Image (cartoon, rainbow over all chains, first blue to last red; front, side, top):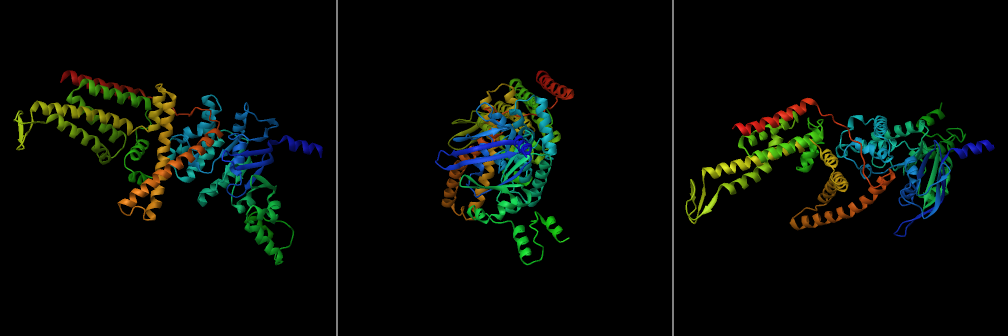
Length: 282
Length: 264
């Protein structure tokens, strides 16, 4: 038991203790947040607009520095000196790719992060090439961002972060303005990253997606983490859902309805997706 | 995409032509050096046949090697040609109370006059300017602004200026995009019905753009910092090799021009 505990502790990448952040305008965006992020976790962060999700992310990556509280990266306290390590290990894919893309060609854009890591040019070139391959962007490398489609820009903004090889990748509402094809592409990328044991944190309003994809769900409300648990735990907690103005995933409702109508046996085996659902009947 | 660039004439279409140019693969520093040398040669040699050769040569290069359609090239040339033509007329023609020139036009109160020598001088000047313009067009229609900016950076222009240019270049397109969306939304609500309304709408869009720019700048800065920005924008650029034949061709062309000026 103890060794398991130790193992769990050693795989903690990021630990946040009592994080508090207030904007200059006086808005209390974060109010005493405690969190532990471990290797390979798939975390969905839910919460209304203005709940403090983005502020939390910016703190986790060192762009904003908290008014109170500490962040530990691999057990080491983050301060001014090692803040660059935090920026390297935790990458954020911003909601709107147009607010992230800065360079005038895809190649230059993806190289921006690795260049800031102060690596030798051949090394940078290799990282960029890998990221472009990963996101299948090779044919666009000389293109300027303003001649890319929305989905292509999103891929560029993800390649931006992958090129820096972070351990934790945060996606801020990634599905927000994507069409179904690109949303599908995004889920494939998430699957691929997950299979490589990267830690992924996604903020989303899509509860069905969160339920299907996430192992762990955080509900943020009023600058606090209201609930932290498995997808099933969180979505079963009607009180939390009500407080945070969240809907329940449709699949859960349907499953419970079927159980209620005695159409499926009550085994508490909530299906995560339609394929799981099909298995119920076979 | 091309439809998009058609709608906005000017900067955006020139940018688009540059990206699709067949000469984009040629080293940018080389293109800058070549076109600037050509520009200087055009002015220094001040020879009518040199100007004509540069004009024709650069036009051919842009159309044939660059792959820009002749129609588009001519339509882009329209503006400088119009300006130069008007300027040349002013140089060639004079106004006087008496018919001084070889050719005079009696306009009752005064004479509009010109002479053969004046006409030649004007033609010479106009063609010289056109030659210089076509050399610069060759550069801008084959080299995206970002590459020209990076050449300037390598030529040790202050970093601050280079980064500003880079940012401005990127943001022009973002602002244009936002502006076009806002004006579409305004049009959908009859915002451009009549002159007064149009002015009102235009003012509001301009004001909104300013506010939006401030907000966007904040988000942008966060995004930059999150990727480790430390006060200097550094990007990787693909090295484009200069080929020997290109150097020989360029040197040959420049020598031929000089020879032309000496012989004729």
